[in-house]
Image (cartoon, one colour):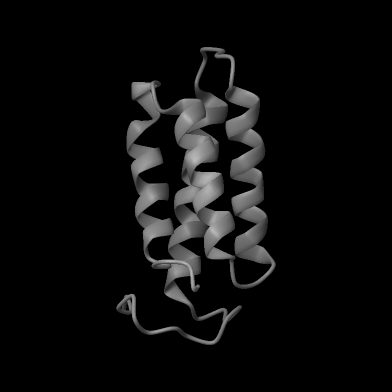
Length: 103
């Protein structure tokens, strides 16, 4: 069950559905990117940032500002590759589950 954005489970919790959804979306996009035959200038940036996101899902509670930064870099790197748009959208939706960064 998804939690509303206002509810915050214990950080780093293995039961945090948001982390599970982010892990799944990132894994899927990494596979799609690896299988994509075309080379493009910022592919390495996308691969690096997807690796960062994957590590955040393993190491505990992701930091919202860092999630958003990685998402922006990934979107900038692969946003024009239509074959990867669905995977990118899934990652964006998973990042949005974490809500706004605390100020």
